[in-house]
Image (cartoon, rainbow, N blue to C red):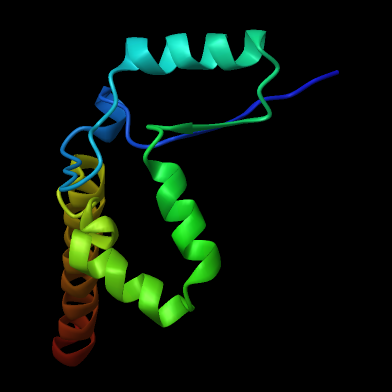
Length: 116
């Protein structure tokens, strides 16, 4: 049994809607699929997509963590998910349920005070 580890960056699908990348391009699904098939057929052990991301893996292994984190912040790696639509939906949903919980508590508290 042989395996190929596939490590793609963001792929242009609905799953990553809204994701923005300053430096690394968002990948085309057909390109990713073709690359995976080619890597599997040639028994490649690891596939990093796009190819340029291997430089980040190398840098991460040689730079001290604080230096790599500063580099990540400088080129926007740490904020690429800020515009991610699913993340925004979860934040709005959590806020909505937090407000509902506060209102429920206020109603219960008011009922106790006014003995309703």
